[in-house]
Image (cartoon, rainbow, N blue to C red; front, side):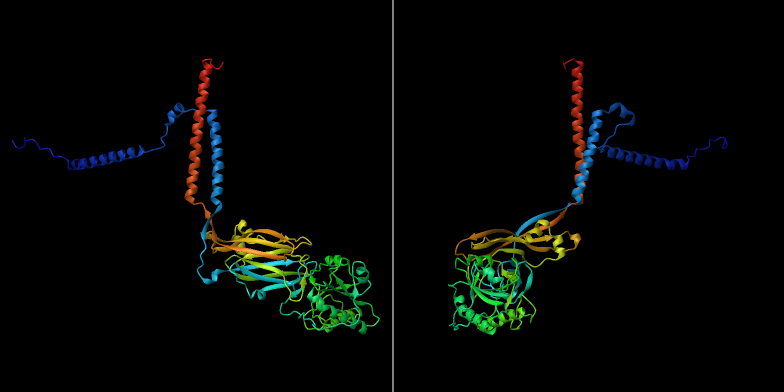
Length: 507
């Protein structure tokens, strides 16, 4: 009976353990699929299925043409934007200038001016400002160079090494006049008949000419006694106020009295004539004249620069012009530089005084290095020396004062940080020039400057990369969108025309 009893059924432990695992995997796959479908729903750029693409879209000639034009326009705009990205632009700001220390209250002024008709012996430079402050030590920081008629350098003028033009105040000449009276009629004949002709150009009203008159006559008499019968050297005189000789003084640009010039037998029309700047005494003038007699006799070399007493200071030279240069520090307040003729031993004829000049250089602030010039933008670099190499001419026979009104502005240029160059500071200016012609006016050069209390700051600015990318996206998207709108409008217009044609409404 036990053998016939049914055998109990056993459940497989392996199959019963895998069933829960399969269920969990299925649930995970289903969850991932749902997340992926939700993510796909965010697709902004849905595409047509390949098998439906030909059925749902069609190409046209208009669309193809617009596509080509859009592509070319995109390419051109992208290239232009790329060039703009590579270009470094400049931005500027204007701020108030602040002085952090007392040393910044002054500004350096650099100048170099040539006067072709103003002798260095007469040229005086002065600096003043609207508060009445004068620069007492200015002469020590101003350099003068003598120039001949052609503008060549004939020697430096040293204020501390000049002859004392003192007169013999009690000189009296009792004998007859022995110097030759010259005028328009006899000047050229006398000039070319003498190896050396020393001429005193004077005006009767001139105080110094009156003091020189007896000295000049006694010198002529002394030379006649020392060299009797030798007519190769002579002394003459010209009255510049007399109608018969006034033209001579104009021709030889006599603007200071007395003026003593040297004329030689072989002079040409454009020859230089030495002017005498030594002591006005019989002894000094006689020694100077005897040196020319030695030149005539070939005892000394012929020279147009004479130092008769050999004291290292020339008695006469051919310097008819002057180049004045200097470096001074002025207060940052409106002021002026003044150049005019001043002498304590001459009287001037202002009607013939010629203040024509060439501004070789005028700048404000420290000199710039070669690197600084490369950093400055062209328009700022040009403003640093706006007056450089400018020429200004006076009208003849009319007293002319030249005025230059200068507005000075400080510039600060900051180069890109990649250059590793510190900011460059410069001072540019604008200038307005004017001539004043007035009888009785003392001919003068006035440089009126006004240093403005502002700073114009310039910074080099480069377009940011993110901005460049944004512009590229705007170009592509904008051109694509506009081209699509135009294509749609043209397509609708063409379809409308076709329908009207089919209906026979186009006439």
